[in-house]
Image 1: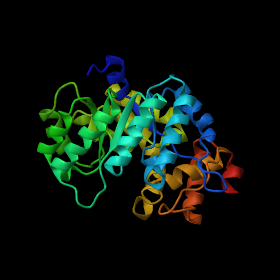
Image 2 (image 1 turned 30 degrees about the horizontal axis):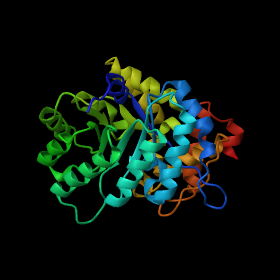
Image 3 (image 1 turned 120 degrees about the horizontal axis):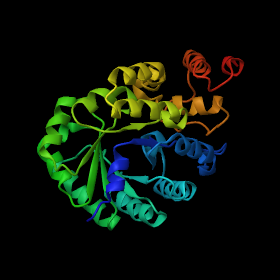
Image 4 (image 1 turned 90 degrees about the vertical axis):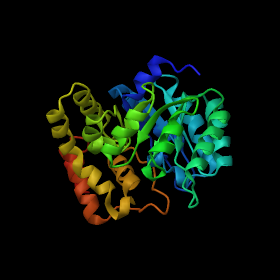
Length: 308
C-alpha cells in the first residue's frame, strides 16, 4: 500500500478530536459542528477526527458513528484529512471501517479493543481484520494501554497499511523503544494531548491529539509550532496557560474529559448538548466557575457571561 507523503506529514501535526453534538432529545445533531470545524481548519489544525474519545465513541451506537463520519466528511469537504474512528467488537469495527471509507475518510483510527479477555495476538488479528475491511485506507493505531507488550506493538506496526500510532500512555521510555523497533515510515503521535506533548516529543513522537481544538484551536496550533521549532520553553509556557482546562477534564477519574469541552462550548455559544452517561454531566458548580474564569481570561467569552 502506498501512503502519500502529504498524509504522513499531516499526521505529524495536530489530530483534532471533534465532539459529538446531541439535541434536546439525545439524538446526534452533527450540523452543530460546522462552526467548530470551520474554526479549527481556519486556525490551522492539520487533521480532524470523527468518532474519537472526545467524540464519545463508546457512547454512540454503530449507526450513530456511521452517521457522524458521513456528516463530518461532508462538512470538511476535503479541506483537511479526516480520520474515522473504528472499534468495539470486530464486527462493529469492520462495519464502521467500510462506512468510513464510503463516507470519504482519509484513514481509519483503530481504537484499542476494550474486551476484558484480550490476547496480544488477538489484537493483531483484530487490526488485520480492520485493515482488510478498510480496503486500502491507511490505519492509525490508538494505543491507550502498552501492557500488550513491545513485541506485539512491533507486530501491529508491521500490519500492512499501518501509517502511524497514537501513543496515549504516560511511558515515554517505552515509546522510545517502540519507535526504535518500528519502521522509520511509521509516524508516532503523542496521544495524551498538549500537556504530555513535550516529553513524548523528546523521545521521537511528533504531533499530538487535542480536544482543546473544539474550543481554542489557535492555542493548540501555537503549541504545535513551538514544539516543531524545538522551542520547548515557549511550548511549556503556552501549555501552562491551558493546564487548568486539562485538570478539569481529568477530574472524576477522567469522567469530565468531554464534559469540560462541551461546557466550554456552551459558554461560547456553540452548545453541543450534554454528554451521555457514564460521562459526568453537568460540571459541578466549582468546576463551572473555574472554567468560566479561564474562558474569560483567554478572551473567549465575556466575563459577565462566564460568571452567569
